[in-house]
Length: 338
Image (cartoon, rainbow, N blue to C red):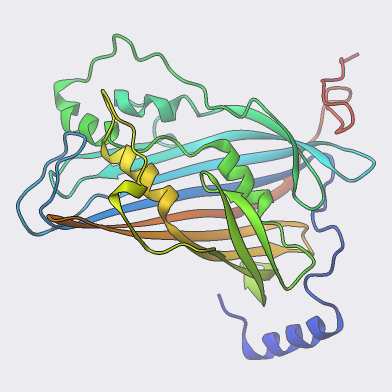
């Protein structure tokens, strides 16, 4: 939300005396510190004209249809140890998952929320179920750069022999067209790779989901909840919203060419922009919102896509650590417990 006029005036005066983007270290790690971030993606797939059937989902002449997908991951991080240089080893755990896909063109719809049921009976959503409780680690420098990542590959569940029930047929069609889970490296990039630098304007490369150079520009300050944050605006370099069919690299062969594949391809081609809120006082990222938009036209249909990646800090706290069980950034292997 925007600052009230009196508060905005006070903040502006303070910033005049102390630049919001001084080159000092910005993350403030302490052993036992915990962060809980809600990580979200939204994908809206809008077609006008001839609706093309992809991934077995509907289709009709004329009209407009929208086939949206939502993904929400609750990620809890714990600082296991802090090195002499201030860098920290953090452990991340997936505390909750929620995924939903809806096809207006056919009425197919799938929804699974781990806070309501730890397991899903939708076979195509088992790949999301496998992520629940997964843990991985990373070493993070004070400026947010990542020095080491371990076990950051999503586990899988063997679905061989699992057959959809008849009552789940429409759920399965929607779930099978859902894009693959967002890679853990993308979430780490959004949380740490967006850390502001000591400049008013600069460029950085973010993995969204491929490496992409973006322009960052300081934009004063803004409050998010109880946090007063440095605000940074970000946008793509040299990208147009309109893309050509030949620009899309979509999987071919058996199982390729579904809506999920087009989602990833269009995501990579999307023109991106957004905002980053970082609290220097709290020493952590508070919020990221990045959107991407594309337009793809052929002789029969206009396809418009809209993506949104979001990260928001939900909770900060501390937890007791087991002596001798943690790691230090200089010693990346576990220290034996005594």
